[in-house]
Structures are given as C-alpha cells and as structure tokens.
Image 1 (cartoon, one colour):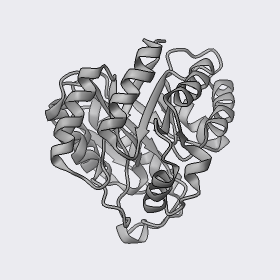
Image 2: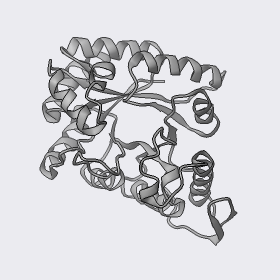
Image 3: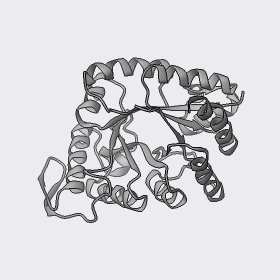
Image 4: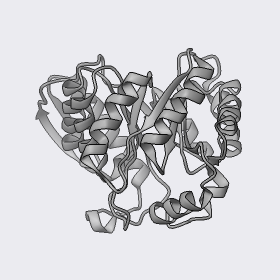
Length: 294
C-alpha cells in the first residue's frame, strides 16, 4: 500500500483568508488529504470539524477530506449520518470518517447524555449510520434510538459508504477497530513510541487481513519553536508538557527521521499537523518530507 501524506486544516485561531490560501496550496503541493480534529468545548478558538470540512470541500478538488476523530457516542445518529453524507456529496466522494469513543467524559452532561454505556451507544450509533447510508428504509429498535422505516436521501457518493477509520489506544478498543473499522488513525496525543506499541497489537488482531489503512497524526514543526508548541498544547489540551512528549520539532531532517520510523513500521498514512505558522510549515513540510518520500 502506497504511503500517503495528509495535512491538518488550520482550525485554531481561525482566519477565513488563511484557509482560503492554505487548502488550495496544500492540494497544489501534492498532499493526499486534509484533516480536521474535533473539539466541542474549550477555551481555545477552534472551528467545528464537520462544517470546516464542508468549507474545505468547496476550496479543493482532489484531496480527500477526513476527520479524526468524531466522538460518535456524543452525536445523534440520524443527524450525523445526514451531515456526513452531505460532505461526501459536496466533495464528490472524498470523505474519510474517523470515529472513536474517547477517553474523557467532560462534555456528556452538557450534551444531555450520561457517560456510562458510551461504548454501547457508540456501537449502536455506528450501526444506524451505516444502515442509513446503505438501506432504503431503516427500522431499528435499540437501547438508545428507535427508527421505524426511516429513509435518508441522498446516499453517499462512495459505495457502499465512506470509509470509517477508528481511533483507539487500549487493547479492547484496538480489537473493536479491527472488528468494525475500515482503517485506523493513531492519535496525535500519543508519542511515536506509544503508537508503535499500539501498532504491534493492531497487527496481531488483523492477522492476515490486508488493505487496512493505518494512519498517525503527528504534531510537527520544522523549526526549533518548542515554547510556542507548548503554548498551543496548553491551550488545546490544557497540558503544555505534552509537546515534549508527543510532538516532533527542530530541523526538517528531524521530522523526516520520525516519518521514516513510522513508514518502516508499516504506517500507510501520515497526518502532519503543524500548530504554529501553518502556511510556512506547509511549504517546509512539502519541500522536506513529501519530496523525500515521493
């Protein structure tokens, strides 16, 4: 499977003019995909993931558009299925849907949901969404939702439906990713070493299964600006110390070294995520990373 490179869409401290420049330029430079990240509540100014993807669909023509990851247990399945279908139609079939259960439960009460049994809700929501994508009418008597002959049109452009990639960390979640998913996306909040350990478990669960994309979000900077990265991690994750643990910064050569480690381990999609000076970093990543591996 050919290695692909994605780029994170700038969502924090948003600037429409910057997005209007960034996305067409990323496509011109040869990136394979552009990705959003989900954060509903927080102190950092951050655009919502799905509406940002719809905007990206209008600014691009070729790149796939992904989200990593939606906390699907927190969303109403009929509405989510419709939103995702809309993005797939508007992008002419370029959507990749990343989903996960998530580790925190902070937002559940604000959404009117109980955090207990969120794995069961996640499974049920995903089943309903896939059925709405592929069946004329859906009847479902579940633990959390009931549908009686519900139709949803249009269907997604991609058949049978857009690919669903899972995010996961622990063993049971990695098993679930193989059981239910079409691919895997390692979190940016895990280090390369942690991801490689997860990858060993994942490969054991995959067995002889082939054609299963494996991605990793990698927070990067081709400059020696750790203090600015710590500022971003403090605002987004409320943990500035995470920058030292999970990000890669310094020279372009340092970034290339970590990308090589990921590719040698069998990673097929590397999502490069600069968090400062995104337009400058886009050019540096294209000239140093993409040209090295193309």
